[in-house]
Image 1 (tube, one colour):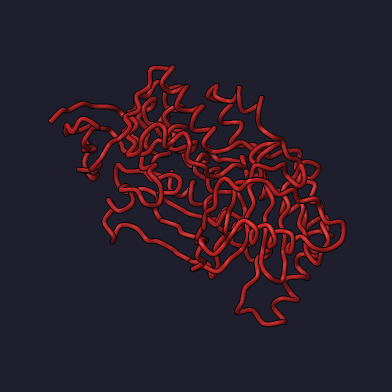
Image 2: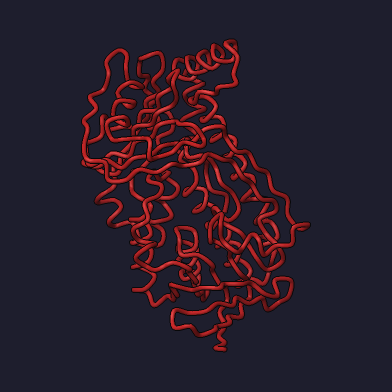
Length: 395
């Protein structure tokens, strides 16, 4: 078995793992990234697309934002539509900050290219990844490379950035962590359409027959979502049925023009909230989806992952420069404070905009009243805008 060593072994080459490696590189800290999938898979998997200002600032910090600033769509607000009318939330005016539409796969492409150009190490197609000796000063990562050779990497620390279904969180003894889980009684049917967005800004729709979201990936590609049953069969949704339902949920006054285009992708997305505490076990630190999942209504998932590793990178930097582990010991508390705030906001946005079959008529009227308050009150709109654009990252 081949043996090697690095300071921080990173499991997962998604936005969290790649960003952590770059931040540590700037601090002079060596890393190796292990990824179960191929480079092509990582760079083409379509996921989130909305970046908070703080996430863009991190891309600027590591020198990876040139293409982002050239190609991203900058957004200053959102619309919330209910009772057949659209209401604008001026996020830029309320917070002096903006959001950016730039696909997660594009972020991954940029981060991989920069990592390799800087001489950083990413090992793709790793199978059988396992973590060892996490409660010692020399934790290790074992895996089998693409040629079938066994490899063992000894580290000072391990960063688990391998997502909800990765091996990092299950490597922690069950009595050492607590998880909090909520599954929502509906799902999203998402499509990628070769058609222009219906508006330059996102439109969140509350409709008696279910939520809808109109967003985009570019000026020629739309990303659209419908609330559907949690066990919905995608095969039952023809293109015609999908477009008909989008038109239906947009009905009302001043209906935005919805242009139908070829549907390139259809997916069913389950909705859940999931939190892990603490986000650390001995020499293993969790970040991103390995530690928490939030419903996509608030567009927090990827941004939360990047915020996690910004905190973690500063903690590692402090340890290697001064020998103090104070920030490492405080990592979980710091990250969880922001994570729970994002979880609460995502839950609130989901509760505000979706239809719940078990609600009483009273509950539905209260929901409409809250929508009216948020869209008519300066204080209500400011509260939404502050959280939507992203809370500051504590580092």
